[in-house]
Image (cartoon, rainbow, N blue to C red; front, top):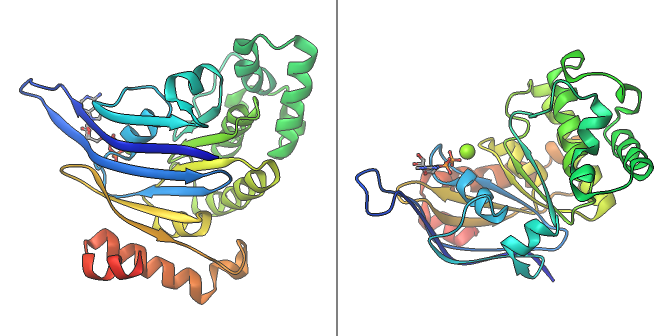
Length: 261
Ligand code: ADP
Ligand code: MG
């Protein structure tokens, strides 16, 4: 079964008004179960809009969005996915544990079950010892890990992430990339990940989807096969080759990206 299926999707904001923006046009995208797909493109090309459509936070102007074989609305109600954004978005007055418990509370999960699940998720992101802390007591990287733990708390089959590591320093970012891959692999989670970092997209992804602006659309889809997703993988010829292919596609070098893609 496919994790995400997007067919003939367009999104026009303020349609028919002076402020009309064609944010997305003719988008076709399929994410297979267990796949890690990144969306990359210049600012304003519609990456966040596409992610928000998958999450059913906004509706498409035309076309259909299917998540886990269901309409996006149904998938949202069934909590088929977890979301993490660039800002961790934690509640300052809640402890780390109670932040992670929040989606389970909304789902009506019992207190003891919530607590056990939150502890399991915090252990997964290496924060078991910080369950009783408040967000302000944690570094930016730790806060982002809490946000990931919260996104994973309901064991969603799909994880949607919008530049989740954008605000972090390069070292923390690389470490979290590794941790994220381990979590996705061990839980079988499918992921759609927005970034504007080419090395980040290449390191994480089975497939990098390249977008361009005005109007926002998909211009290339580049498969990435690294020998391993670790330090050796980052230094492999395949890594640099994929980076070159994504760079060319971003530059709009269509002849080459068509051959590559
Ligand atoms: P990206 O995430 O790739 O930087 P966005 O998806 O945020 O791009 O935005 C794509 C385009 O849609 C931009 O031109 C942006 O200004 C416009 N846009 C996004 N959200 C809205 C909105 N709610 N109302 C009007 N225009 C919007
Ligand atoms: Mg964005």
